[in-house]
Image 1: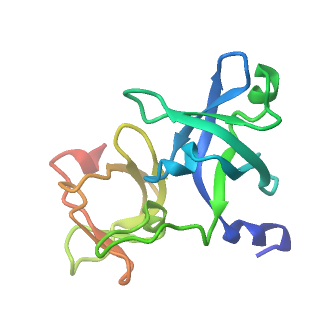
Image 2: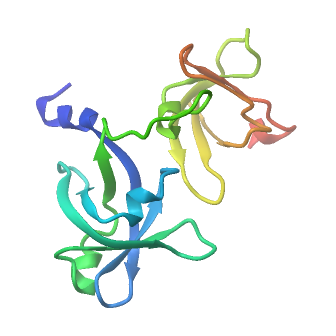
Length: 180
């Protein structure tokens, strides 16, 4: 790994700045985290534009938009629409060691990346989880062994088992989903 990329291992992307809100510099953030306090509790946050290391910024306020998964945040030094627009497309990050403690059987969604996807516990993998796409329902992007990509809704009915320690998850897709 190149020295310029080593810092990536020290950070987790927990959201993406997807737009601006109004004229006063507020930003819309699409979360990739189940911990809303990362977007609502004031304090230091880190924003990374493509190709550069994260830079610290102070979160002043944050709120979730009613009925949506998006958060609207206000950062120090971002006080107008132009300054906000310059941050659209940036990643919202936290230090890798800033992971909330989880209970038994819980896991961080980002830990799914790299797991093998199987159709039965004893079968060969059909592919590997390469990304997590947040939306109404989270989607797992799976790169199949033939190189094609597959999007699988991350819901218990389709992904009933996750075996982090063993490096795989079980898929029970409905008929036709694997053909899309």
